[in-house]
Amino acid sequence: MQRNTTRTKQQGAASIEFAFVFILIFAIFYGMVGYFVPLLLSATYQELSSEALRQSISLRYSSLDTNDIQLQAQRVIDESWLPETWAHTCEGYSNRYLKTDGNTWSVCVRHNSPASILMPISLFGLDLLRLPDEIRGEAAVRLH
Image (cartoon, rainbow, N blue to C red):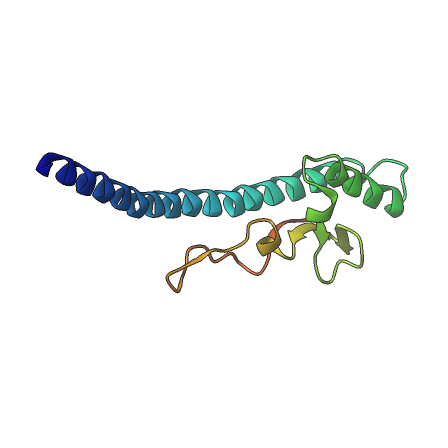
């Protein structure tokens, strides 16, 4: 009879240990994924804005007008893998991704609410994941 009681107690201890270890492993995994997503989006927005600017500059000396060049920059962003709700224009870009101020051309793409992608989790009063207020990528070039 003594053996069964000891065995039962040890099984209960193992399940309690598993619960604590699972919480720890889940927090580490969620933290890795939670920081991977914003870093991936930041790199994507930077690359996307650079590519849209490259495409726009390549059309600069063609017979296209400024609206067509801006539509080309928007087409590059619209055809990317990003969902439509994740690509927003930056402040000062007047509903277009491409801004031309004389000889300076720039493209800016941003996500204004990264917390909507991956919700932060609070564990024992600690926030496991704090995302920035916005994620953005901007490319600019000065033409001569």
